[in-house]
Structures are given as C-alpha cells and as structure tokens.
Image (cartoon, rainbow, N blue to C red):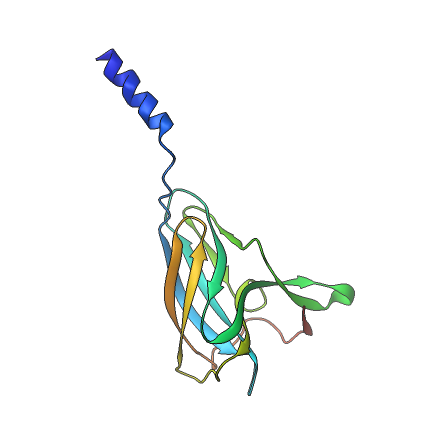
Length: 155
C-alpha cells in the first residue's frame, strides 16, 4: 500500500499542471469611433472561473485591417493616449477583467466596413491557456460612456 501511495505521488508531481481556465465573455458591445470612422473598439467583461490566472494575448476579426489590444495611459500634459498592449491583459483566477471605454479594450483599426447599430462583429480572442474563444459582439452606438469627454490621442 505504501508503494502505491508513493507511486501515485510521484506521478502527480511528474504530470504538468493542467490549466482549468474557464473563460466566459460578458456584456460585449462594439462601436465605431464616430460617424464615417476608420476605427472602432470592443468592450466586455472576461470572467475566469478557473483555478489559474490566464491572459488575453490577442484578438482577430475581419471587421478591420488591424486588431490590437489597447489601453489608455496619461501622457504629457495630462492628455490621455491609447497604446497597444503587446503583453495582453491578465485575467485573474476566479475573477473578472473588464474592458471598457477609457481603459483596456480591443481596438479595430482600418475598418473594412461601417459599424451600424445592431450589426454583429465576430471576434476571436486568444488566451494563453484557454486558447481561442470566438464571440459575436453586437454593435451598440447608443450606449453611453461613463467617462467624460477628455482629450485623447491615439499612439
């Protein structure tokens, strides 16, 4: 019996840890940057019901020529700037990471088509552990931002 227990312990330590990352996307919406805009963005909550942290590391969609993960940082003279976040966004185990206007978001640059109210944008999100998650995101041009209209510069 003792040998079986020791063998079971040895096997459990030798096996790689399995990522039990259970990712779900909550309350997604997308919008264009304005009328006749060449850029847009998607916002949503990422819930990680798993036991390990995961990381959103990329996004892809045929809505735009380029799709990147972006955030806002305060630049010179207090002007907010959007910047590409190459390392992605950590989604802690058992928690939610929110992508929202004025914060982290998926950026669509060089839109291939207009984004009209009620349209649906298909986006594939790539996570380090969970892999690819495809989500259909409704375009909602009427949703109001909870942020003020501060000056913003894209970088």
